[in-house]
Image (tube, rainbow over all chains, first blue to last red; front, side):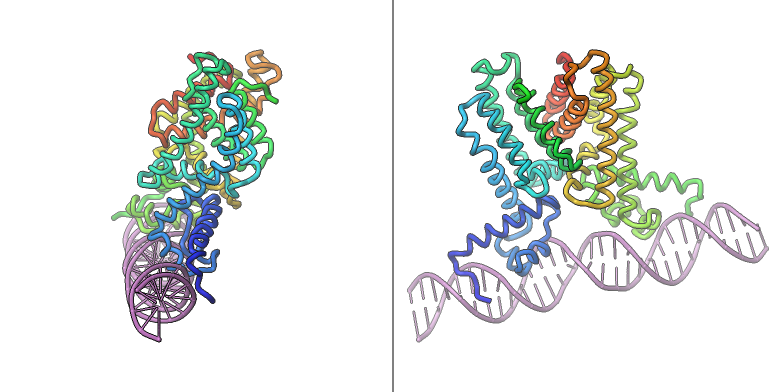
Length: 201
Length: 201
DNA sequence: AATTATACAGAACGATCGTTCGTTCGTATT
DNA sequence: AATACGAACGAACGATCGTTCTGTATAATT
């Protein structure tokens, strides 16, 4: 078996992380196992962990990669829409589409991580908090722009809107997946549109 | 150390389950460990597992006990209110109060379990599905009664209302706990009241 | 009072966990 | 051509996992 050329090294690390994202999407970040992941990648445990240092570093890399996958699927495509309510509407559509497409085989990654670490301190929890706060900030900025444009009631708190959208996507995604019911995402989308004061569509 | 009299046996089993509920509330049902739980209860691993047969039976007992704790805290007190919208309002208040009181030290138990098993088949997943469906059914019945009484728009789907309330409580509870922000539950309560068409209060 | 049943401790099992170590071997540098 | 670097391997580590088995002290039954 030939060793990897140094040009492939970055690729192999990325490959490992992507496989770990899919695994952690189902089993959770805490459910990642060096042995199982190494088997799946056909490498040795030591070869795998050697790239990252220790398991926690691997988990943090996995979280970062998952966030990037989410950003690519939800945030980036919506940047084409004008700021404010139209962009929020585009985000909701991309968000639901992302959940429907099963970009993460085990459901929204950040939701899983949030539940895993919401009561467990440590660097991973801090990372998750930062990710969620950043996303809520993005939503809040757009909600504020929508209110300024008169597309949301003047007494509507943009932070409330952001929190509601996040809660609905998070809770709705889990419930829909758990119940195995395709209407779960329909209901979630409708609820998110209601939050934005949009017609059911 | 004297052996337990047979009259205390049920108590000791219940004690073990209650301790396991608190542990699982933080670490997840899958995070329960016979060894740690036995240590915490000052018993041997074999003595603990002997009461339940195997770990899965323990986990199922833990889930059932957690549901009962939730039922006592949220459903039962709201039964005093008249059916329909008033009862839904009472449920929302009890629900938020329950989350605020920290009845589960690690956040809503069913939410944690839902995330753990939403992509993992097995008897435990089936139990969780049954629990969630039952709860959604309860909410839906009340929403239907509210609509019939004219307290909800005629075109409002009771199943939608139930799903929305569940999603908001689930997602909002996690986000609020994660961000360590007391306003998270305020926002969640406001969103749930908005779902029911109630004034912000 | 003798017997049966039960509740638990203690030890051990095979498996798996994350991690460390020394070694090998391909690639890059000098 | 000689050397240095780094990726990956295989073996082994101590710890912990869930489970099983045996022994024993107690409670319940006869």
